[in-house]
Length: 400
Image (cartoon, rainbow, N blue to C red):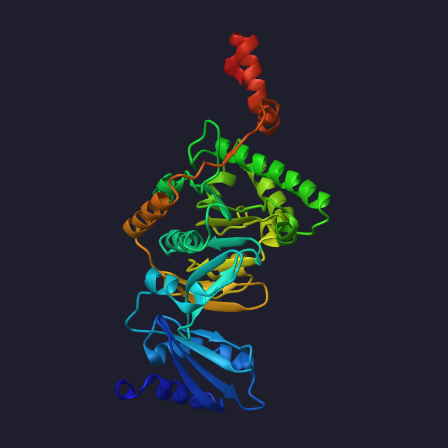
């Protein structure tokens, strides 16, 4: 009998069997899920609706459903996965009117919502972004989509990138735009892959942050926007992208210093136009610590293995019920939005980067200079002792 009923009729039947009276049931179809909204009658307990999600999933013959109760307008929402998933191409996002007419300082065009609307966010307003989820659920593709939306909107005079890729393979496609867009240091590759290089670069960015605050103070400006309005030489925005943050902080020698630098940048750097996007496939309390969560109010959760990991990322369960393949929850501190991330292949990223690199081929590369004594201060104390021992006491160097 259930095979001949629509999903809307099945939802009404299940709710009626639990004596939950509703009105104004509305169906909104999306690329990945379909949202059913209704307004419960007065006297119906919201906790009772939340408690029947397993019964709804069994009746609808789907692995899981997500219940949003209450929504922003007082309604209750039930999200049902579609039997056939639709891919959201990156070209659809970059050619949309919302993206083309956007006046955001750092626009991130991420994908489509449940109601098929283009979802965009301003990184400058976040001001930093944490991306986490289980492996293979779309984090690297999501980072590529965000980087593409920035590169197609901002010129090298407006945007500089710092790319850190401990896995050494995810961000290698951006080598072709190293000259116009990527900031690097003398003796380092454009895509940073080593923890020691990452620590030195983050230390240099902290010094750049302090220098920029001095420049703001001289012009009595409160932030980069006010400074650029009155300065003859405007500042460019810096976006730091770390693909696998967990690998860096778990490093025995440099992990603690790297976390301290990231927390320092997250606390102070937004006013001077330095913003961070960090991604990790280890949503544990040892990686996403209290300091990280406090300084990254905007977070994206891809599908997680357990509800505990979902709570670590977005402070509530729900990410474990996602369908994977770019299905995400966008958490902005106050509300959660479900978004289907756009898809871009590695070949398309390479092609677009080659095109952008050819357009700005004559641009000079941005190089951060760090003095030798500053590099010594940034080094770990144990490493410094090891070098001294090797220089003056070769016979005892083995103990270090």
